[in-house]
Image 1 (tube, helix red, strand yellow):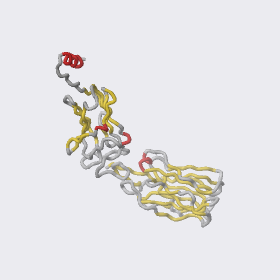
Image 2: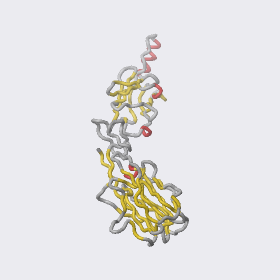
Image 3: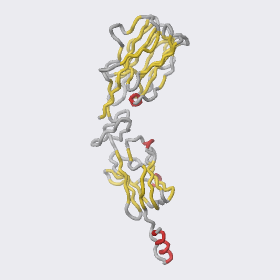
Image 4: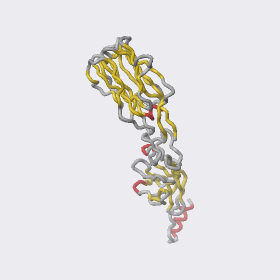
Length: 320
């Protein structure tokens, strides 16, 4: 009010009209977290007074100094609100960014801290927080290492009949992927029923990436044709379950896959289209459960696959 009266008086007296002074009230959010995916960052809303276009300049402060934010990333919808685009198509932050600096036209200003992680000398990002560009980021954008527990496992009976002979040959409880490897899918043959099945495995690297698929032993007979529908998990995903239908033998079979990060929080998996015939009367749908994935297979077979089950081991994530 006083400022407005002073400007009116200056106009009446023919004196230079003083510029409106900018005032800061609140910024939302109150800091910028670069460990969030850019699609989740959106914008910074800067609330105050007299925030008209051009009244405030914005820059990013990093180790090289202040880097001006392009004007097209700044908007002033009202006198009381200024926005800065910090999304994936907004401000580009360097690996050493410290602050977002607002400088008022009439002097003074305000700044927001920028939090980064995953770089040398910085705290490591936690699970489900994307690393800023740096030396410690893994293939799955989290700072940490993945491995498979070798001390704990759970066997799951999926379904089927009682014919055929057990595989693997007792006393082995399951035919397992090599140590440090995980199941990435199935391959086999089918017609009216599942004639043959083989577990595919890949080495799990510490950064969450997967090696090339290798097949274990094939179980069953030589009938049927190669699976019409692929039972190989999408790139970056692993096998967490199986579903299908059985009667006196295994009539239909499909796999279920998930990503490593989703497995740790029991996120929804992806069902692959199943293979086999339309017989059988008992459906099954079995998964490892939270935090675990398939590392082995067991069942019964002869000229066909009569029964199937699988072994699960916990997925281990260790923050660096």
